[in-house]
Image (tube, rainbow, N blue to C red; front, side, top):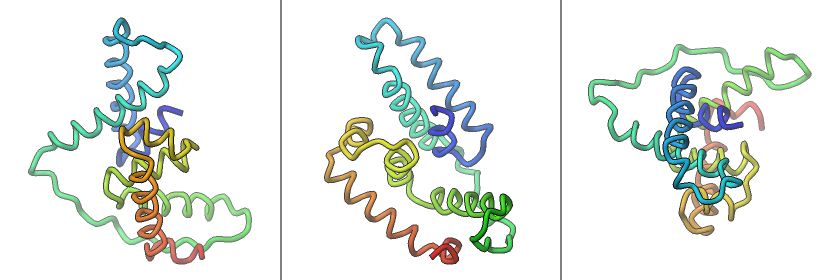
Length: 151
């Protein structure tokens, strides 16, 4: 489950594995300072988000985003595994276009199945902030042309 969270915060699986390993290392180093060991899952999630935010802030300026090669748009329907995977990939591409904060909130709410209150606690924001940011993110996802075929 933690790897899935890390995967949603990065662009590729290798970076997700590195991010998770770093967060787990930070958790190990802070083990003595953690008062409630039953809350480790939330602690590691928070370490993932903080680590990813730090990486984003420290990224090199000479990295440039480039457009992906055009792929045929997926046509939803049936139980065709290839179509389901194409739809899954299209959804992740659309989610990765969201700003980092909105992406984190959508992932925690809908992929990790956290409530609005739990999401607010993990991110250290108010419940109203979670509601409004998720609403804006879902609006952007509805407008994404790549996901237009799903409707």
